[in-house]
Length: 351
Image (cartoon, rainbow, N blue to C red; front, side, top):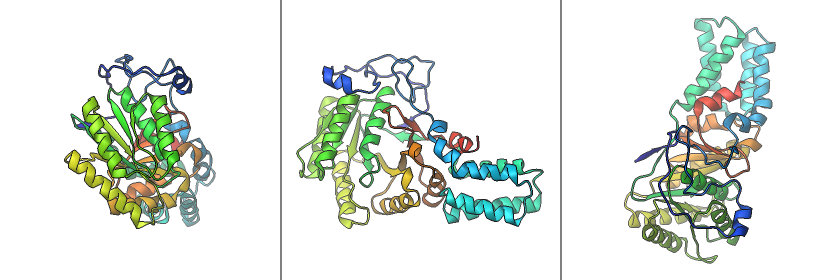
């Protein structure tokens, strides 16, 4: 089934595994899987008490105050919409990491509309730009294909983009929506990756299947799927190796993992989510193209959005890859993870 991430939901009744005191001390506002959720509250992120994750607007403070702040000021300080204005707007949008192609399309559209029917004011032109950017991202909110009885989510990306942290945040969010996730440490090339996933498993109270460093990733994935079936887990989230995307051996390893998954769970993985670091800007777009061409991608997770002043890469991704952005990392805390809302994202840039 398609799992609507914006719906109101009650969690399934599950038996929580008690965590050791030391694990609880490490946990960051993690709600136990069996805790009730108020039916009148949209369950986007589990909360404990009144603590909630950062929203999209908060995560865009650097982008909004940086390059996009300069874009907004143009419309306020230069009311005359002449050729010099359009040229400067194009330059500033490129600086915001929208990319040359995406920027040219947006500015050309505004120029064309202005030539046919002049904007009454610079404010009208700014609203037209905002509407065009929203249209570029689309109006559909994200959903995940999580079929019963067991859904498999493969998470890919190069090292250092926040892949393991994003997996933990996703598991935390899905637990809050009533799912029973299990994590698989498929990046066996780095001992640190295995250890990190185990720590996140403790913090989120999510079981982790792992083997020793250097083990065959395919064997770990096989064991993880078997464990999920025997334990009655309904969602398997698989971490993968993240060597440089220019190395063909990484892509072949990912294809091998996909074949093993498909043999064990026909039709899986049901989602293949690529994690991109918002700080890398257009370099992230190049990574996405390589992964999409080599192993197939169903959606994107944009991490570290709060650390970047170049959130404009979102628009390049939407136009050039035609891949949905399903989640964004809005901060450093476990609960700072949100389903991507195109209208909220675009609107926040122009506040």
